[in-house]
Length: 133
Image (tube, rainbow, N blue to C red; front, side):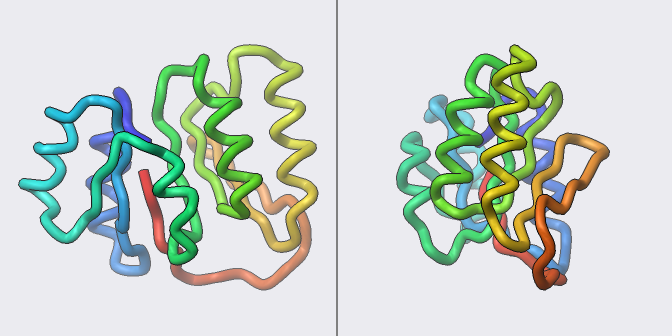
């Protein structure tokens, strides 16, 4: 789910040999057209529900306006996805705490916020993940 930092995340994930960039979601159709030209094998959508429903997507990167972080991250957690959220995690401390509490419910779950990777609970580690931005 792309916004200001989205193009950087998209490029970095696409260039990471251990990752597969599967989807890019954005409300701006012009941005999605640019993604399709640069990454023709990547699926694009304006509906985040499509990405969350894809069972082959293991991880979601959220780079959207901060006011949307909590709702999108919570939806990704409910869908059982690993999660990268650009900083700040949320626009209110209580919402950030809620996300941490939700993440702790998942075995082997990882979530990232910019430079910090937190393993919420014990489990096996994947060396590669399918990412959606």
